[in-house]
Structures are given as structure tokens and as C-alpha cells.
Amino acid sequence: MEYTVVAQNRKARFDFHILETFEAGIVLTGTEIKSVRAGKANLREGYVRIDGGELWLVNVHISPYEQGTHYNHEPLRRRKLLMTRQEIRRLASKVEEKGLTLIPLRMYIKESRWAKIEIALAKGKQAHDKRDAVAERDANRDMARAVRRNREE
Image (cartoon, rainbow, N blue to C red; front, side):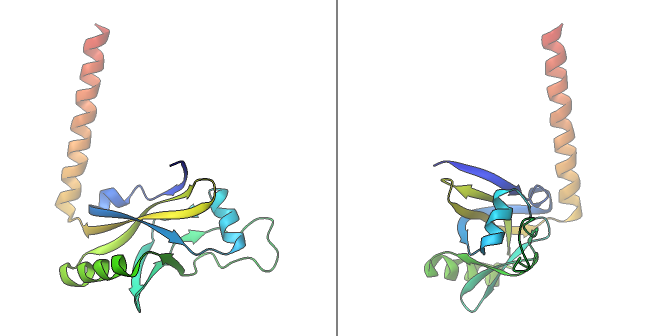
């Protein structure tokens, strides 16, 4: 499967423990898909809400299409996500039961046609978890530098 990533939520893996990931389709208007193809989407503050047995992508910014007319879309509107009823029910039970949340990880164009979004079932990290992640990243960086230095000598 060929796909092109148009937007990523890099901060998600820092702020949340990712438990499971899913792929969902997105219902977009004409000007929205053109903006997405141009890479004008921002997932940073976005989240997924379950309302009436449907998944909704909330607070994701897709910039207005530059060549659009007065029919251009609203940048922060709610967008419907497409998944099977069975998957939505399963996600709803996990979110209600365990206090988990659904967040978007990345948006991509699949097979040069369809806009898809990867969403994650996630649990928020505490401040000390974030400090541990930063310390681990710094330690890995220091080890990689030491290995490079040893190879050069």
C-alpha cells in the first residue's frame, strides 16, 4: 500500500501512552481535500469524540484552500470519521470503561486517492512520565554520540 503522510501529531507520543492504533476514513469537502493534499493540516490540538454511535474528529485545523471562493470550508469544523459499527462500539466501551482517550496521530493520502487518519487509543502521561521520556531520549542520544566517536577513532 502506497501512502503519503500530510500531517503528523508529533507531540502525541510525548503526551500520551499509545495503547492501540486504528485507521479511519475522513469525510471531507472539496476544498478540504485540496488543502490536505497540499499539506495544510494541523493535528496538534485535535481529538476524537464518539457521539451517537459516530466518530467525530474535533479541533483539527485544515487551512482554507487558497484558490477557493466564498464556498471555502471552516478550518476547525467537526469532521466525521468512517469506521465499522463494530469497531466504533469497541472503542466506545474502552473509552468509557478505562478513562482512555482517542487522539489523531497522522493524516495521509492512501493510494493517491483517499484521505485517511490514524487514530490511537491512548492514556495521558503524568509529568514524571514525561521527564522519564526526556531522560531516556537524552541517554540514547549520548550513547549514539559515543558510538560514533569510537568509530571515528
